[in-house]
Length: 474
Image 1 (cartoon, rainbow, N blue to C red):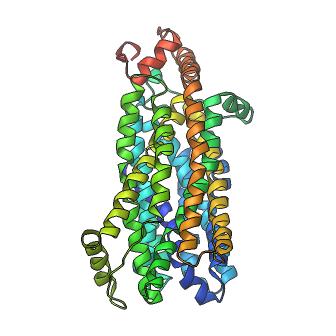
Image 2: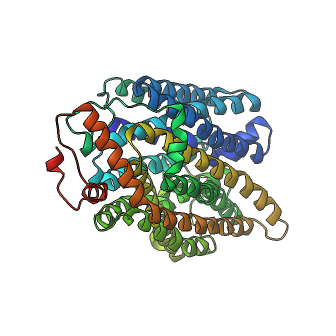
Image 3: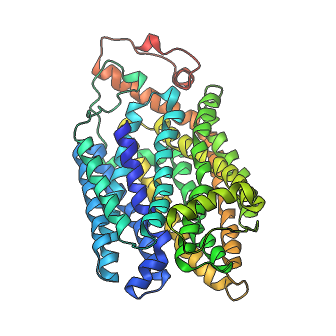
């Protein structure tokens, strides 16, 4: 489990490296920030498209070599990014990395779902999802700290870390499909996905809502990769040099994303409420996403007075930023609002993962996750690209950093349709869980016909949610 958490974290580090370095990379290659932002957009989109193919291959074959191949590809692309001599080469290296990154999240999700019992899915999936959030934060921080005077360094360091993680994965246990599924205890489960299974997947209405919600959610989340740019612009507006402003932007953006760590609470609450009603996880996700919107809007307009030593080293600037949290009320207020808003939106992540596992058999989970990730990638790429256009359009009426604040605030309203779709998923999840429970019981009967595994699917859903002990079926 630890190796999968590390792999999921590192691939998000690779994604998060570029945004804090838009200006530095663009200046080195003689292109504008928009050209470098295009590389991030391409990475979001291509990794999501590639994930569908990787996930299908993982659901169809042995998952371990598929995951290793994907990891080696993104490692190679990331190293090439750090060695690129011009913009076209950099863009191609990001394309290669994106193709590999698509395989890591989708295939490892299917493996992790087989390691987790239904009763604790929200909690454990929160750690797996948190590793991705931590990776994004770490990418922002590593990009700013290691790259503020040499933008190539963080790419090479991340690629080396990816090689180490790959070597560790070679020594891990190959997890069987359905390993932790109570209905399949004591039997070998050999089911694989087939081409004609896609209509079956989409007939589960919960899958449709879980996949589509990412389109609007990720438009909002995609805009948040510009947080370092907002805080960098605020620092420049207060007279700081470009190098110090990049560092300040990266550190502030990292601090303000710490609320994502509270996704663990969202997973715990989802598990607890799921034991009361099969709608539990969907309700936690819907309420969290909708309640966060006003806090995000307020966050971008609270003024910040930045007090750091201009031109000082990284350590001195970081100490000054941390001191500002306690000595500058505006900085402390912004941090509190950001942590709370991110805690609310982060509640949907572990519950989304858990619901995919709840309503789908093991051989479909990677593919369903990848379809959701594809829609997520389209939304995130669209948000990342569109927000840049919006910022430039707003600049004529609102000088920086106000144009960034107005644009980011507007994009948070995309969370509203996301909350509605989670509520709609809550209306169909019980029936889809019952159908999946019945299908797994049928598979067990086929594998072990001498064993009685009968039962009411509706009762099975409650038992899977934790209302009754599963021991009789074991």
